[in-house]
Length: 349
Image 1 (cartoon, rainbow, N blue to C red):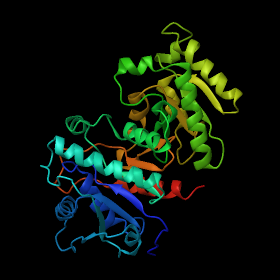
Image 2: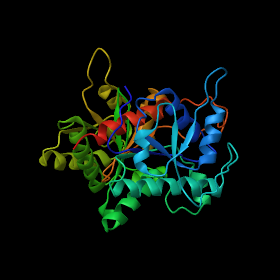
Image 3: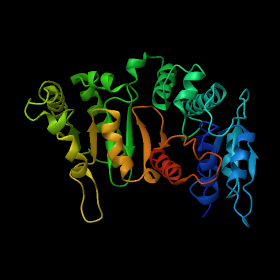
């Protein structure tokens, strides 16, 4: 049944040289009921090019409609791609090639959608992949979606960036993981493992998942060092930093346990058909420690969620895939799951 939600969901086109536009087109074509009331933010030319590249022999083409108002998003027929066109974008981009123009266009779409969500004009935002090299070439001061959205939320609230702490969560139906640090070097990520940062991560995770799950989450905490330090033999961060943060979180009523050996905690948390995992989520100490296990379980099912924002933002868990951009073969599964999760999260109080 084609249902029209009260508030639409904005889907940013991502880097126009990558697979973002074509997976958006595929999602509108292949999941019309789920995408009812959603719309893409970007340029009409970019989305029409994407719709053309996914055309299949003998199948009807995907029409692209230009919106004059956000309310029209809920009135579009199924298997139609509505676009909210932004003025001032460059539009064209060579498939698979990073550029300042492409990075600037992608960032502008994110900023527009974030501000619309913060004003309450859209229920949620789903972001197609960015290219960090293109962002940097465009002079964007932030390395990725998470940091850019944090800055927009802080600006909207009129507070300093430090007063708008956010965290990245990657999730699928088997595993969730939240990261203490995000897009920094490994050396800087290790330095970021402080009592304050770990405790803040636990608090953000507890608050966000309590709302989305409807109950306090069971949080497993990974150690930083091999074997979680082996009692101090391989480093003292678990003893001096992570364990005290867990103790402080537990004093706040947060259900957190650890630190556990990083090479086993994710297996203990994994939900399978025949058993429930020991934890609802794992707090990981740095980017790759947490994301490799989730992505290994299936990139096409993973969803990136930004926790701590005063808006709902989800994203596929993969990048721009420049090597296959424009070939019409990119898998839209992760984007479809991101829309599904955005729907679920925006429906909760």
